[in-house]
Length: 203
Image 1 (cartoon, rainbow, N blue to C red):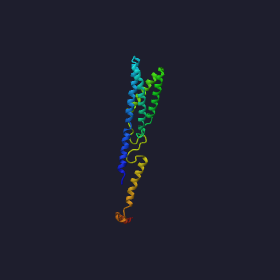
Image 2: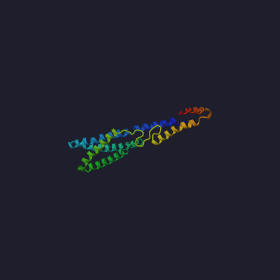
Image 3: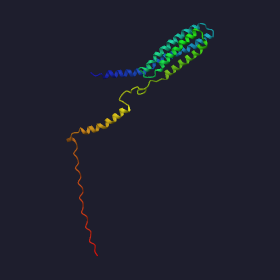
Image 4: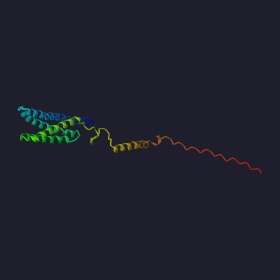
Protein backbone atom coordinates (compact mmCIF):
# COMPACT_ATOMS: atom_id res chain seq x y z
CA UNK A 1 0.00 0.00 0.00
CA UNK A 2 1.46 3.34 -1.04
CA UNK A 3 1.69 6.20 1.45
CA UNK A 4 2.25 8.84 -1.23
CA UNK A 5 -1.28 10.38 -1.03
CA UNK A 6 -0.97 10.69 2.74
CA UNK A 7 2.45 12.33 2.48
CA UNK A 8 1.14 14.68 -0.19
CA UNK A 9 -1.76 15.69 2.05
CA UNK A 10 0.58 16.35 4.98
CA UNK A 11 2.89 18.41 2.77
CA UNK A 12 0.01 20.51 1.44
CA UNK A 13 -1.36 21.05 4.95
CA UNK A 14 2.06 22.11 6.27
CA UNK A 15 2.50 24.55 3.39
CA UNK A 16 -0.96 26.00 4.04
CA UNK A 17 -0.19 26.47 7.74
CA UNK A 18 3.04 28.26 6.87
CA UNK A 19 1.19 30.54 4.48
CA UNK A 20 -1.45 31.44 7.10
CA UNK A 21 0.82 31.54 10.15
CA UNK A 22 1.01 35.36 10.20
CA UNK A 23 -2.74 36.01 10.29
CA UNK A 24 -3.34 35.29 14.02
CA UNK A 25 -0.69 37.85 14.96
CA UNK A 26 -2.11 40.37 12.49
CA UNK A 27 -5.60 40.19 13.94
CA UNK A 28 -4.69 40.09 17.63
CA UNK A 29 -2.02 42.79 17.37
CA UNK A 30 -4.42 45.07 15.51
CA UNK A 31 -7.04 44.65 18.24
CA UNK A 32 -4.38 45.30 20.91
CA UNK A 33 -3.18 48.45 19.12
CA UNK A 34 -6.74 49.81 18.94
CA UNK A 35 -7.27 49.15 22.65
CA UNK A 36 -3.97 50.83 23.50
CA UNK A 37 -4.85 53.85 21.39
CA UNK A 38 -8.21 54.10 23.19
CA UNK A 39 -6.27 54.60 26.44
CA UNK A 40 -5.15 58.02 25.22
CA UNK A 41 -8.77 58.94 24.35
CA UNK A 42 -10.06 57.88 27.77
CA UNK A 43 -7.22 59.74 29.50
CA UNK A 44 -8.08 62.89 27.54
CA UNK A 45 -11.73 62.64 28.52
CA UNK A 46 -10.69 62.13 32.14
CA UNK A 47 -8.53 65.26 32.05
CA UNK A 48 -11.45 67.13 30.53
CA UNK A 49 -13.48 66.49 33.69
CA UNK A 50 -15.35 63.26 32.86
CA UNK A 51 -14.97 61.15 35.99
CA UNK A 52 -16.52 57.95 34.47
CA UNK A 53 -13.69 58.01 31.92
CA UNK A 54 -11.27 57.18 34.76
CA UNK A 55 -13.06 53.90 35.39
CA UNK A 56 -13.13 53.14 31.66
CA UNK A 57 -9.42 54.01 31.41
CA UNK A 58 -8.60 51.59 34.22
CA UNK A 59 -10.68 48.72 32.89
CA UNK A 60 -9.47 49.19 29.34
CA UNK A 61 -5.87 48.97 30.54
CA UNK A 62 -6.50 45.44 31.81
CA UNK A 63 -8.23 44.41 28.59
CA UNK A 64 -5.40 45.90 26.50
CA UNK A 65 -2.81 44.02 28.55
CA UNK A 66 -4.62 40.73 28.00
CA UNK A 67 -4.89 41.50 24.27
CA UNK A 68 -1.15 42.16 24.04
CA UNK A 69 -0.42 38.89 25.84
CA UNK A 70 -2.68 37.02 23.41
CA UNK A 71 -0.89 38.73 20.52
CA UNK A 72 2.47 37.59 21.89
CA UNK A 73 1.23 34.00 22.00
CA UNK A 74 -0.21 34.40 18.50
CA UNK A 75 3.23 35.45 17.24
CA UNK A 76 4.68 32.01 17.99
CA UNK A 77 3.25 30.49 14.76
CA UNK A 78 5.33 33.04 12.88
CA UNK A 79 8.32 30.96 13.91
CA UNK A 80 6.71 27.51 14.17
CA UNK A 81 5.53 26.50 11.60
CA UNK A 82 5.94 29.78 9.72
CA UNK A 83 9.77 29.68 9.95
CA UNK A 84 9.80 33.43 10.36
CA UNK A 85 11.27 35.69 13.07
CA UNK A 86 10.88 35.02 16.78
CA UNK A 87 11.33 38.59 17.96
CA UNK A 88 7.62 39.60 17.58
CA UNK A 89 6.68 37.12 20.32
CA UNK A 90 9.45 38.46 22.54
CA UNK A 91 8.43 42.04 21.74
CA UNK A 92 4.85 41.22 22.70
CA UNK A 93 5.98 39.82 26.04
CA UNK A 94 8.11 42.92 26.64
CA UNK A 95 5.17 45.17 25.80
CA UNK A 96 2.99 43.24 28.21
CA UNK A 97 5.58 43.84 30.93
CA UNK A 98 5.53 47.57 30.19
CA UNK A 99 1.73 47.59 30.44
CA UNK A 100 1.90 45.87 33.82
CA UNK A 101 4.35 48.53 35.00
CA UNK A 102 2.11 51.23 33.54
CA UNK A 103 -0.90 49.96 35.49
CA UNK A 104 1.15 49.92 38.69
CA UNK A 105 2.33 53.49 38.11
CA UNK A 106 -1.26 54.56 37.41
CA UNK A 107 -2.56 53.22 40.70
CA UNK A 108 0.31 54.96 42.50
CA UNK A 109 -0.49 58.18 40.61
CA UNK A 110 3.11 58.58 39.44
CA UNK A 111 2.02 60.69 36.48
CA UNK A 112 5.51 61.98 35.71
CA UNK A 113 6.39 58.47 34.45
CA UNK A 114 2.87 57.20 33.73
CA UNK A 115 2.14 59.67 30.93
CA UNK A 116 5.36 59.33 28.83
CA UNK A 117 5.40 55.57 29.33
CA UNK A 118 1.82 55.37 28.11
CA UNK A 119 2.74 57.30 24.95
CA UNK A 120 5.66 54.93 24.36
CA UNK A 121 3.45 51.86 24.84
CA UNK A 122 0.89 53.16 22.33
CA UNK A 123 3.64 53.91 19.78
CA UNK A 124 5.17 50.44 20.19
CA UNK A 125 1.78 48.78 19.83
CA UNK A 126 1.02 50.68 16.63
CA UNK A 127 4.47 49.87 15.20
CA UNK A 128 3.98 46.17 15.90
CA UNK A 129 0.57 46.25 14.22
CA UNK A 130 2.01 48.00 11.16
CA UNK A 131 4.82 45.46 10.96
CA UNK A 132 2.32 42.61 11.26
CA UNK A 133 0.49 43.84 8.16
CA UNK A 134 3.68 44.48 6.19
CA UNK A 135 5.20 41.10 6.97
CA UNK A 136 5.07 38.33 4.37
CA UNK A 137 5.94 34.70 5.14
CA UNK A 138 9.24 33.54 3.63
CA UNK A 139 8.92 31.70 0.37
CA UNK A 140 10.38 28.17 0.03
CA UNK A 141 14.17 28.30 0.03
CA UNK A 142 14.45 31.45 2.19
CA UNK A 143 15.77 31.50 5.78
CA UNK A 144 16.68 27.84 5.70
CA UNK A 145 13.25 26.72 4.51
CA UNK A 146 13.65 23.80 2.09
CA UNK A 147 12.07 24.26 -1.28
CA UNK A 148 9.48 21.80 -2.52
CA UNK A 149 10.52 19.47 -5.33
CA UNK A 150 14.00 18.27 -6.31
CA UNK A 151 17.16 19.44 -4.63
CA UNK A 152 18.43 22.81 -5.77
CA UNK A 153 21.72 23.07 -3.87
CA UNK A 154 25.03 23.41 -5.76
CA UNK A 155 26.05 19.93 -4.61
CA UNK A 156 22.84 18.48 -5.99
CA UNK A 157 23.43 20.31 -9.27
CA UNK A 158 26.90 18.77 -9.53
CA UNK A 159 25.47 15.34 -8.79
CA UNK A 160 22.83 15.77 -11.48
CA UNK A 161 25.43 16.92 -13.99
CA UNK A 162 27.66 13.94 -13.19
CA UNK A 163 24.73 11.55 -13.55
CA UNK A 164 23.83 13.08 -16.91
CA UNK A 165 27.43 12.57 -18.06
CA UNK A 166 27.74 9.00 -16.84
CA UNK A 167 24.33 7.88 -18.13
CA UNK A 168 25.19 8.03 -21.90
CA UNK A 169 28.48 6.21 -21.29
CA UNK A 170 26.67 3.48 -19.37
CA UNK A 171 24.08 3.14 -22.12
CA UNK A 172 26.80 2.78 -24.72
CA UNK A 173 28.53 0.13 -22.64
CA UNK A 174 25.29 -1.82 -22.31
CA UNK A 175 24.94 -2.31 -26.09
CA UNK A 176 25.77 -5.96 -26.98
CA UNK A 177 28.63 -6.51 -29.44
CA UNK A 178 26.33 -7.97 -32.12
CA UNK A 179 24.09 -4.90 -32.00
CA UNK A 180 26.97 -2.51 -32.37
CA UNK A 181 27.55 -1.12 -35.88
CA UNK A 182 30.43 -2.80 -37.78
CA UNK A 183 33.71 -1.02 -37.76
CA UNK A 184 34.69 0.61 -41.00
CA UNK A 185 37.77 -0.95 -42.62
CA UNK A 186 40.74 1.30 -42.92
CA UNK A 187 41.07 2.95 -46.26
CA UNK A 188 43.92 1.74 -48.46
CA UNK A 189 46.63 4.19 -49.15
CA UNK A 190 46.72 5.42 -52.78
CA UNK A 191 49.45 3.74 -54.93
CA UNK A 192 52.60 5.68 -55.30
CA UNK A 193 53.66 6.59 -58.79
CA UNK A 194 57.29 5.96 -59.75
CA UNK A 195 59.30 9.05 -60.38
CA UNK A 196 59.53 10.13 -64.00
CA UNK A 197 62.91 9.43 -65.68
CA UNK A 198 65.02 12.47 -66.19
CA UNK A 199 66.43 12.94 -69.72
CA UNK A 200 70.16 12.60 -70.17
CA UNK A 201 71.96 15.77 -70.54
CA UNK A 202 73.59 16.38 -73.94
CA UNK A 203 76.91 17.95 -74.33
